[in-house]
Length: 159
Image 1 (tube, rainbow, N blue to C red):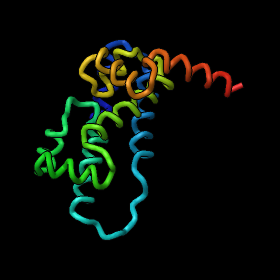
Image 2: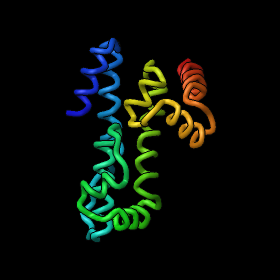
Image 3: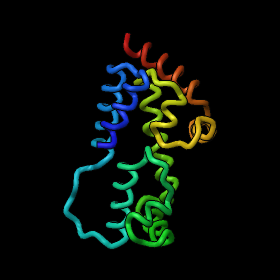
């Protein structure tokens, strides 16, 4: 439902309907591909909490949330959530959140013509400058450089 609201807002702001539809489809496919098929295994309390946290992040990464907000939503302490994430995923809830935001930003940079400012907002970054700083730290290049590099490689590989 949140995705539909974002698309409607984009259309009102002048984003072409075609780009809005592609964005919706990309977000839906991203959510589907991010979740591996379920396997019936015994689940520890830490595993269950980490999985609930991961699901919460996947559904809310575009909102201004923090690891404290995640813990509050899951009704646990931030320390216990941090322990669960470290044990199950090898990272903190904040790192997982940023990783999810960056993953979606990379997809949008390659597959849409949305501005870097627009992508930063859709992916939950507070400001475009913060998005650019985090992106460059993680990818070794700015979002614009990433888009150019990957659009060139997509064009060349598409021949």
